[in-house]
Image (cartoon, rainbow, N blue to C red; front, side):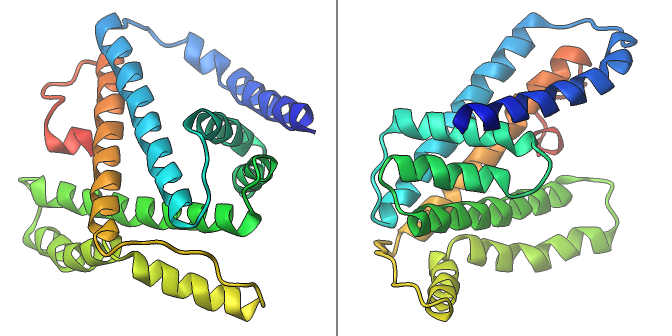
Length: 224
């Protein structure tokens, strides 16, 4: 089953590459190998950072997963996301975690929390970008300030997600999960995910810079 799913993912990845091959061949490539190598090093560090955060989330829901198993599950499930449809990545994570003795609800809860934290902190970083842009009109500089504080509050409050999750589980008749979140976990998780977005920005800034040199690649707008 696992081999079949990976084969399907490889087929669709190959299909995308084949469809864009002529456009890629027509480009003039002048790569900066140092920037390219650094981008991959930072990207690998970012993935490891996020995987460790996910392991931490799983533990808060009473599940233990070795970091080597987590690395394997994370990347296998991210490969199958290229199969058409929006659920294969999550189903893959549930299936692979279940093989390691982790319940479906624990995996789904950790995925839901991860998505909520990633999206809210991603919007938070995006709002900081608009505050940084110097030539923005007044409205576009004030609006982020209006949105920024609520986003920061949401990103730092796992209790909001947990309350929603508890209501959903009660509605579908599932037993409550073991939840072990400490009061400071919210701010810590928020900062962890904000830092992951900055790392992603640094990695992709270096990747772009290796192909098309940027004037000031380390300015905040490029990193976001």
